[in-house]
Length: 213
Image 1: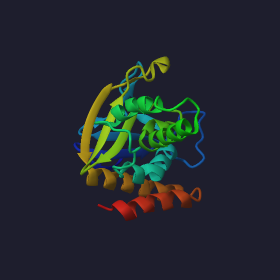
Image 2: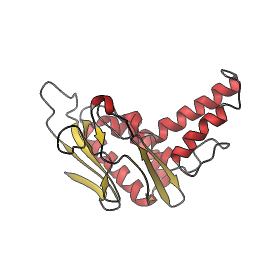
Image 3: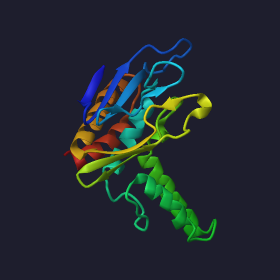
């Protein structure tokens, strides 16, 4: 296992491993990831077996972090007329803002697109691929990164239960950024022996240049 950060505060831990029978990753990128937030692995789940963690093609998560890290670190990256104490409150207030406009009007469509973009940049479930990720949001707020999740009934049809149903934690902004960027840099180097990932590296370097804390 390779770990970036401190498990007791914030860290990403991963391992490349052999895929299950019948699965043949194109880039040998099958593996598992632990997402440690203040001592809790928020990727942990159970499904009638001992607790497990996220395991899938690691490229999906690396791609999402590379493309969105600079948005996560920008604490002003949400619509100016939408406010909330945390990520879930912001999402709850989206509907109220949309209701101010006529359905399908140009203003409604513009705001709906802004809301969609904000979620795609802060909501890690967009990167789930085919495994079991939490319904989890990340956004910078002053010198911290807010990490919030709400997993009630998220994967019940698959008979999967995330170990941590709901919560809100704050981690040091610099610790978060360094751990995520180092994790991405290492795996991009690994992937680049398999495929040209210039666009992802450019996105990551954009964040590093702006937020190298």
